[in-house]
Image 1 (cartoon, rainbow, N blue to C red):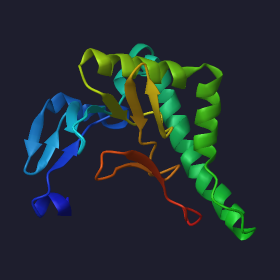
Image 2 (image 1 turned 135 degrees about the horizontal axis):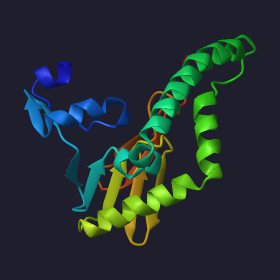
Image 3 (image 1 turned 180 degrees about the horizontal axis):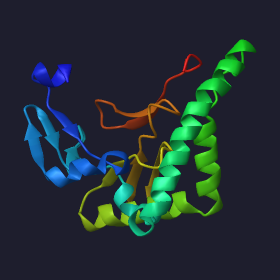
Image 4 (image 1 turned 180 degrees about the vertical axis):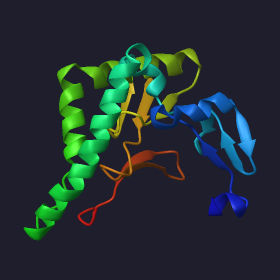
Length: 182
């Protein structure tokens, strides 16, 4: 909010945890722009479609009740994770995300991540862009899929990851190294 007040344009893409904001449609609140998708032109001229990505999650789209149960369970695991890491800290063990581990194992079991990445990449290709940037599944990744660059920022809460674009147009996943205090 401070950046927006100081004339920095902030673009907010709602996802499944704040989907009620989608009812506002594309809207601007001062320097905060609310959109479902947006195109980013990188410094090397490539164009990337940016979206949250929950629109391509079969559970979110087809089984809302399961998505709500999953969201509740996820929140409970996040709270429990605080206690797990306080105990780990006592034994000088590094931070470990129970929620990221559980989410990855469950989704890995049903091959969700691969299908999700491929579906998003196909969608990006249909929009005529060189790549897609999303989040939603909290699994940071950069890879090429059928000529489309798929990038997922992961998340800042569990895995402490973000995407960084370099001045020459290269992208990399930034991993915050000292997350033992979380």
